[in-house]
Image (tube, rainbow, N blue to C red; front, side, top):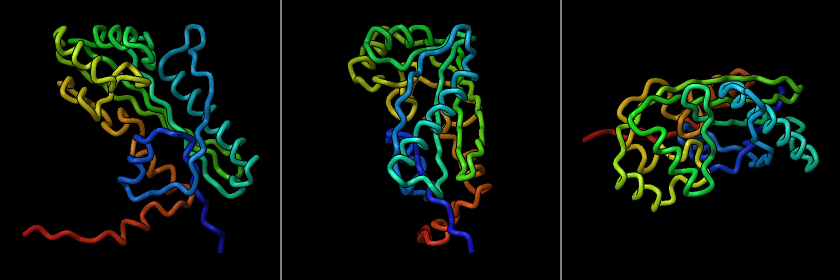
Length: 212
């Protein structure tokens, strides 16, 4: 019987790990991949998300193999890009960047592209790309200033984290909530199950809670 593959998560994001844990998956290894995430000239948001996810998977596989832990492993990477039209919003590193993002998103629609890339032990690359459409309420200056003071925006695509305070800004969402957080769970399960990873094993061992 073939040995089941291990799972390497090519990320240091606690959000992505928490999402995997939510569906009963605990990666055997965490191998963060640090790459240059600068968009190429005229690069479209969906192309950027997929290219960065691909590069993260490749970088993590190289790093893991150098450590001797990737011989029979699936390497899962993801990247999230927030865009208004063709304009790609940054992962906010400064308060000024976050403020610019929030003022641009205020009262209007935007899209979140989340790409998954998974490298198999044979070197094949499996991909999924999820597009989610959102609309923010019109934000007051007080709301923007208060959110900036929370520092929740730091290093978040588009300058906000939907799973936190900024969830109160969303008036409409069409697509995958988990993808906006950082990992589309339906697509993740499909990729892993398709390569023989036992995604359902822990589900069978969950305690059943009976409502009283």
